Image (tube, rainbow, N blue to C red):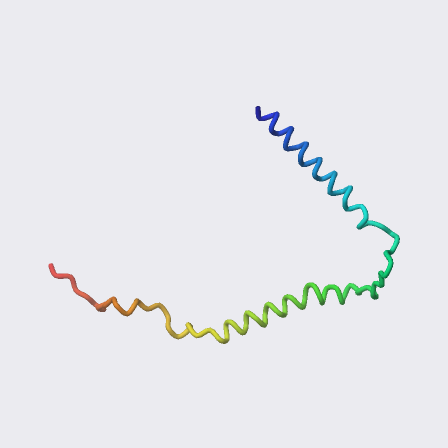
Length: 93
């Protein structure tokens, strides 16, 4: 029974992949569409700056603002107000 299910899953996967490849063939067309007006391409430095450096800088700025504006730094670990904790409690023997 396992071989039959594996064969069915393989056939389904291969068929889905084939259909995706056949349907995406217009994306690989070399002929431009009417009204297509692409701009100038990006250089390697521009691409790395836009898709690598800029997100890293934005992440750093946001993380820095969160850490700088954090209000819970001075509180530390405290118990809830309805629990009385006595320091140096001695057990009666």
